[in-house]
Image (cartoon, rainbow, N blue to C red):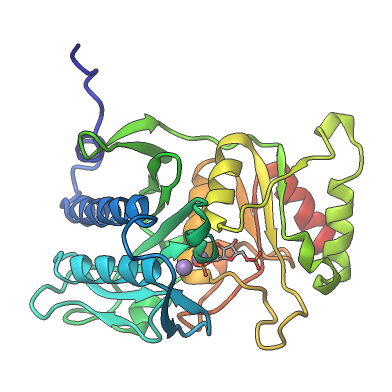
Length: 335
Ligand code: AHG
Ligand code: MN
Ligand code: MN
């Protein structure tokens, strides 16, 4: 039986390029290289239990977190492939202290910030993990890029997305014309369009927050979370609590079904007063995606994530992200 003609990532990009005759195809080429990196990581993630790749690498990263072998594999896979893709002038990774140069002679017009493997604590227990990426246009005129090219507002991203390694491997991304979801057919090695023009429900179904940190949250955050737990027939509250511990997996479930994810600032670690999540390669790309899908993303003092001017590659921000009506309510309550 002939398989239905699936819309591949390239086919989708070429089709959408017809709407932008000015497009040079560089962004498409960049995304396609990222897809190849994602397929490579997916194959490794799916074999991790069998290959000797689970467990710790014995190193720690700039975040002071123990680097798992798969983190390292994912980081190296993306770095090596993207350094020679010809579309980038500089990169930043959660796993690297400073910016990552591209190969000499391969400098291009975009920048890439990425979390090679989000949800590392879930690697060894077979729970969904993912890769998150964010693309900007370079600011410096030419040659190798610099930190100046990396430190740009989320509002100025040209593309953002993630690859989710779960019961199936999915690619979800936006280039500013809505959010598209693709599912990998491992028998063919192709991503096919499975979730065109994703729109997130304007009211949540799920509340995602690590309640274990409750005693460290600011008072007003505790108050808002308690409000979400009060019975409110009209708003469908109290919501079900779902927290996977992989931001990308919690985000994806909420994107599709409706939800509000909260990682507020906490007093747990004086060195990390703004919570755990990083702006450049976690909060900002997901904020572009959620806005493109009809939702919102703010900090726990009501600032739009996309409007924050970054000052450091690895700066952390409190994050409230998800269904529009609930994030609107959070903004009013917390301001
Ligand atoms: P990473 O594995 O890239 O460091 O990210 C982990 C993050 C995020 O994925 C998740 O939402 C959060 O850590 C969970 O943190 P807690 O365990 O403190 O809830
Ligand atoms: Mn992460
Ligand atoms: Mn990570």
